[in-house]
Length: 304
Image (cartoon, rainbow, N blue to C red; front, side, top):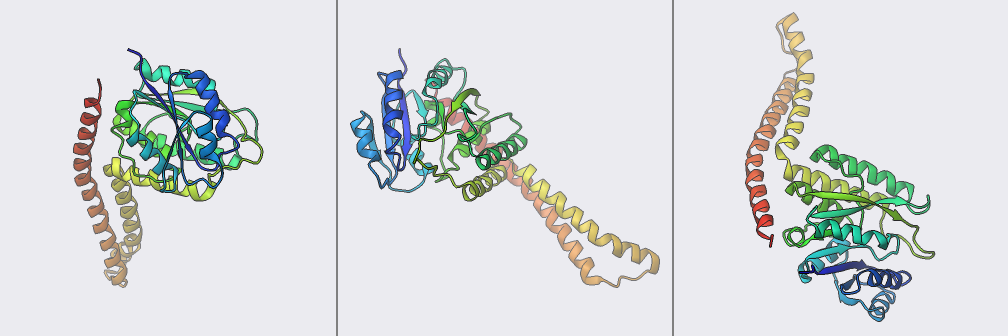
């Protein structure tokens, strides 16, 4: 039985590019539905998408994460192909991504961007992606090369068991970490990445969105690996406490006096917080283990 494919395109003010994106993917996936979700565009994006043969729907809550959450909730398909509507991703990579999921080689196939020119991938964006992706690899022990790619295919079991929390451009990070948390197979395929057409501007803000992504990584680090997270805090506090108390101990050894009693009390307080932090990590690790088992069982239950 042939698997159904849904092409999902979140859009905001993409009237200059949306038609080409829709026609390119219609030419490749002739029997598949293309869904364009308009996120409060102030131009003619929705009308052009409708005229180009897409199914147009609307999400009033601003932010890409809100749009993707609505897409995943509304649409039923065997395979979901998510792609931005800015005409920067190579449509010819799509069959490779879809086939990898359809053949059960992975639960998610990601297009790793290979820019065709220096203008395609701004230096700030590329540097930020490298740093953030590297952070996730260190924390979660994986080797992802392009965590922030907006071009990926996903299985139904993966999509329907994904509790999206982010509202903006952090969504790709959350999708990736969710897959790593499930230990679901993820494959990456190199894909050409082009410059945005003239008069078409990126909605991603390098610093503000980069900061939001970093905060999300830290939050998910605390949530998914609480023992490691709180142990690191515990070690830092313990080192600070010992560093404060060593001169006091040295003075006491030499003179038998403690002249800096408030400092000694401060050191003791910091050490107590260190012990509490480690204990908290142990408790939350037990809770996280149970929650992770439930997530994996729910994920496996979705297999047909």
